[in-house]
Image (cartoon, rainbow, N blue to C red; front, side, top):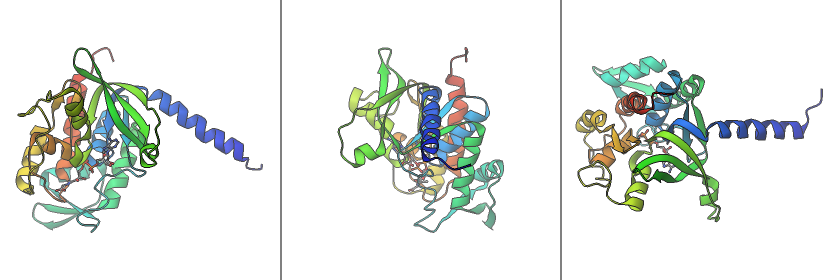
Length: 262
Ligand code: 48H
């Protein structure tokens, strides 16, 4: 049988649209497919929660593939190792309490486990705005192709609804900043806005990330580096255990926020 280019094209376009349409109303929408966002997606999807992740870049992984300063290894501490075990990512003990893993194995494994659990990751899509309703709650995301903004084209976006949104955008805390810019100082932080990340202190950054992983605006959770940035905690360098643990915590919290009729 000959391969027909039009059939290939229709197969790609139709199957993509089918998945995109399915994602127009989800339980949880996650912004950012870094380690925190993908870990949250894995835990949510595993429990049957309808979960979509939107990632600006062509490739998932966020800051993880670059390891530390492009040395593509990551470090996890004792608590973070439990998540390496969960994902079956191989690691070596470097010193007591310090475990190293291949950054690309970590990214590809978490990504694969999240997708196979049922999460849908949409790459090359940027979240450029949110939907807020009168009762002061985030109700969805406003999306556009990343290529549109890269090309500087004026193209209006599309929108999706979500019961819960997770800001897992890393250092830039983009979803929290959108809320701060558009509706003012209404975040559940000490200032009402993004407090801003503090200088590197691995011990404290990792110690505070789980407490910072919480609801920051009605319907909006924050996870990963964005959690420390929004609440004013330190960065921690290339130790990734906290990112994975924060993603897991965000998933657990999101489940408690979903309406019972699901
Ligand atoms: C769609 C977006 C948008 C948007 C951003 O940076 P990440 O890897 O974030 P985390 O929190 O999973 O992990 C942080 C870690 O990588 C890190 O930077 C650490 C530990 N730093 C410590 C230190 O001291 O420096 O991933 C965030 C993802 C990226 O892939 C972005 O492209 C994506 O979010 N993203 N996607 N729409 N508006 N904004």
